Length: 171
Image (cartoon, rainbow, N blue to C red; front, side, top):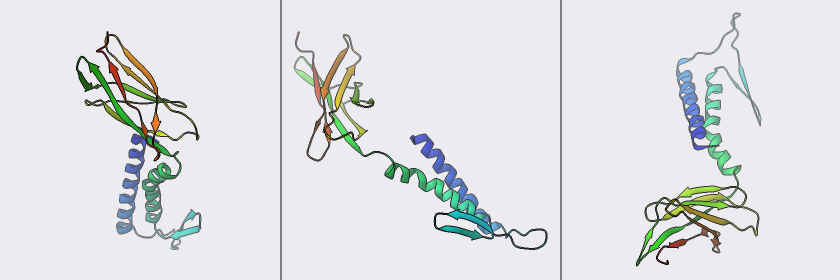
């Protein structure tokens, strides 16, 4: 679920909870034409909830809308790990960060990010199979274009690191 769809689901949940709270304080019980109070049943995993007001239904549905995205992100998404590094340019006697470099992480899908002014970047990618290697691709729009393919190094805690310095000082 993307960040915008999560935001929409959260907003709908907040609206439903607010409407449900308004109904709790404003709405009266539902009575049929013969004068009997109507119970509303909501099915749950543990059985049924019964209420004499539709406010409970609206509150429960709104709460589900609010709680579902973070729970899905935590329990249903694959484990992630962070890869970070710095892309630099060695030109003459100076070494500086390379802003605007595009960094892609492979193997199964392509996850891309850009570097900030000091050349650093970070990206979170799903954890692959044990023993799977990750390649980093760096592409810089320059004249002439610069391109590099390398392997991501991992430390004992599972954090990935990929650094590269393009060298324009050699002719």
